[in-house]
Amino acid sequence: MTKTTAKFMTLFFIMLFISACVSEEGNIADQDLKDIADAAASDPVDSLSEQDIETLPDEIIPEPPEKPIAEETTETLAETEDIDEETASDDYEFTLTLEKTDDSVKLTWTPFSGEFEVGGFENYKVIRSITNADPTYPGESLLKTIVDINETEYVDRLPEAGISYYRVAAIGEYKQKFHTNVESTEFPHPKETPDQDITLVAEKAENGVLLKWTRYDGEFLQYKVVMSTDHPYPKYPDDRTLETVPFQNITSYTDLTPESGTSYYAVTVIRPDRSRFTSKRVMITV
Image 1 (tube, rainbow, N blue to C red):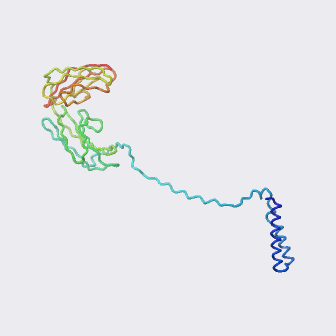
Image 2: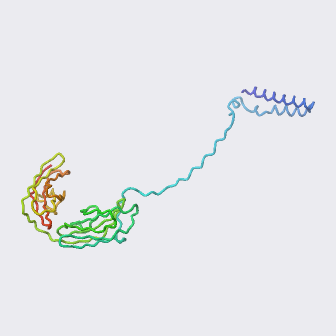
Image 3: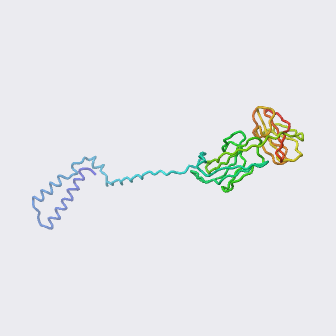
């Protein structure tokens, strides 16, 4: 509304009020009339411009107070990544002993009694090395995985010729590990005693290198498929073992990940008395 309209309405209501008073009291003092008129003349609407009046809000609604910001809290969660942490096993009663017979080695250890920082016990890893006097898992020949914490024996029925180093690792759920002490023993090197010609053939296949050899007819324990890339006379246990074949009638093996370049392959026959001999060697280039 405009300034004039606002003032008119103010005077209108004042006159109505005066009329009501006169009708009830009969008259009104001149000074009272003057005071009323002065009040009307000093109406605060006069101090506002027309633009101010038009932009006045109908109702001023106070904004609600801001909610207090909750204090941030941080929880420490156990990490689920592999910890792969080595802790000295000397702090725990977790020790290994060996018992040697003519053709085997019995390993016995105390049950693991330590605690992992995260998670619990998962398994034992029984390992052996013929080159490293301080073997650790992983990285050495794995003989056995045992999941029962109270199963604390293992018999190596085909120990290596020469000196072998044994150890047991306790593995936690997140790969944290503890090792026992290292124990070693020695077996004499048996000479190879061939009693049959074992021929070997290598050929390229779609998925690698296919090896085929003659079946051994004598007293049998297993075949060892071995290979070398740096000399032409591979044999077990001196060179890399690709596969152990415990069945006498299985006379083939496929190397699915052959080395690029020239490789040399052989098959060593192992008898129950641990004597052995090696087949003819073959060479192939891929």
